[in-house]
Length: 132
Image (cartoon, rainbow, N blue to C red):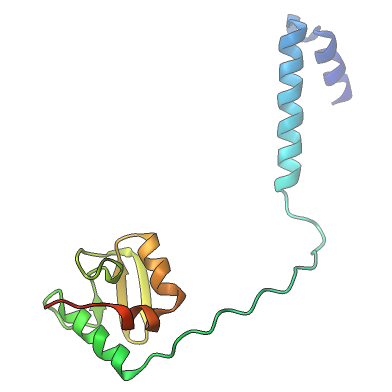
């Protein structure tokens, strides 16, 4: 590697100009440095203690009753809330953004809606306004 860099520095490698050779050398060094940083450490490092997860609101009978109403919004009672709860059940959710809440599987329209409900499902469901 040292001879390669010396050759690049002097611009003699493959008849390159000195500026072009230095550009190539810089790119190689940057690539080597980035590759070394992305490799996992050979010895495990001590991780800082993770913060305790926020307490979630418990799932109540009222929560389950609201889920049952949301489930029926698509015309089927199948424990699948296909309409996006994050959008007040105004649009269809997708299978790629699911959330399991007890026996119910909820589909959301995007990651942001899923994230809002995943933080505290019972609290988010309790705040859900279901229109007839």
